[in-house]
Image (cartoon, rainbow, N blue to C red; front, side, top):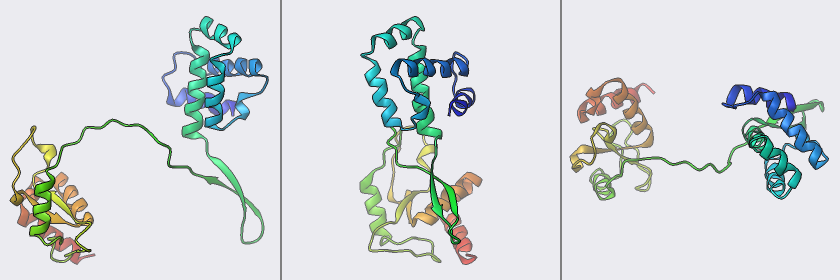
Length: 209
């Protein structure tokens, strides 16, 4: 585990000290605690240990002398565990032989801050009602209980400067698949901002699938 941690430091961080120094810092903390931190691969458990160390005078002393190197070592170890460690499980294959497989993990809560362009939901509702909640691609014509379909801006909001006046004629109703294809087409050629050109292309694509 120690070798994987040092490799992580070297490859994925901008650490101000060498990876061996941070590994050494964790070894020192292990001696203070009386057990090997590198044998613990549970992120919640390391987080708990980190909190408990805030009341450990010996740790606080060495961390102060080391200009927070020991604190940063713990932070790097937490990041290392949460982003790179894959739990392995043992199963039996069809022949009864043991096989070790990787158990990939998802679902961790991550805080993100994003900027998005505000949509006018009243216009979106008008457009969907106008189009009977049906994809305007003739070969598709997807409709499911007046749900799922989306309003597509013929001129993407990402290409506008600030707020713009939107009219129902500026949007058409598409199913999620056709909507995704429409945006891919727009990246290839701005001519697909034209409603008829876009629908003709979607028509031809759906005919071949």
